[in-house]
Image 1 (cartoon, helix red, strand yellow):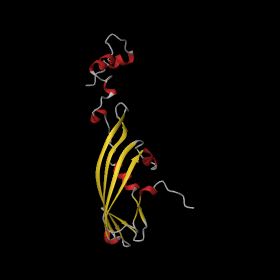
Image 2: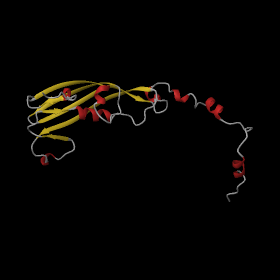
Image 3: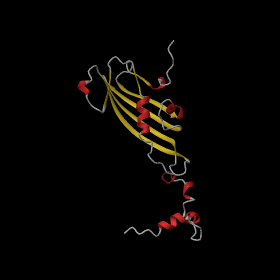
Image 4: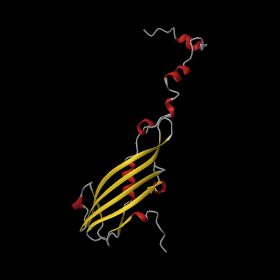
Length: 178
């Protein structure tokens, strides 16, 4: 008996697909991203709609992603709902000779391929929207980390001139560097 793959829900049948337009829909949550080893996303609510236009051995694919993922604020580590809205295009060509289709914009699959799993492409296209630095201000939320660094907060962290200093540092004040 064949073991059920967690990626089986993302298989697109190629042999049984007639020419014309086809639509698929995927609801992604944190468990989808947990299937990948190095995923930065742990929580998400993303809807991916895939539209495929098949013309013989060529598939013109349009992936539309919309939703949000949880990222941590770079200042206060507060979880933020980071919005995602994307449209990605991919051309898939079923061919036995890869050399004639030497391009980065075309994914070449062997002619006898039964199905194509879109999970990796969806995963990568959504990770491209993961921010390098997420801050509460950009999500229109108040950031907790700004409170101690306000002018009043900084004044409380300054030392007064009356506090005793280490005599070793006092000797360095008299060094002439000229």
